[in-house]
Structure formats: C-alpha cells, structure tokens
Length: 99
Image (tube, rainbow, N blue to C red):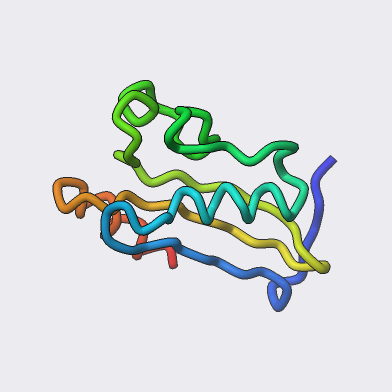
C-alpha cells in the first residue's frame, strides 16, 4: 500500500561533510527516531543500515551514496547519506543532482 504525500510536505535532505564527521551516524539516528528502524546501527560495529556493501562494513566508511525515505510529522523525508572520503567525491556530486 503506497502512501501519497502532497509535494509541499516532501523534504529532500542530503547529508554531506568531510570524512569521520558523523554523516552515517546522523542518518542512522534519523531513521531510528522516525521509526524506520528499531535499533540504531553503529558504523564501528558494521551494523549501519545505510552502509550496505561488505567493504563499507569492513572499513567503517561510506563508499556509495544511499537513499531512503522516512516520515516525520506528516512530512515525507527523502534522505541521502553520502561518502566523506575525497576518493568518492563523484558519489557526492551525483547526489547533488537530485537535491
């Protein structure tokens, strides 16, 4: 069953910053507090929902941008978690196109 949200209640949010700034940790907290997940995934434990690749879990860094949707106070939030390492700048640039 799909949920229809009026455009004025849609928010697109990109989480972007330098490496080790806490982007994925912030994203995991947003997912938890909006009820999207039932536990806060920890990057250091390899349990972050947004870090889905095995390499990301092993290295403790985000390599690819990941998008998800959650709901908060009658708003649909489209959330993009991006890498912070300079080697993956192209991933961040691709994300900017949709924001």
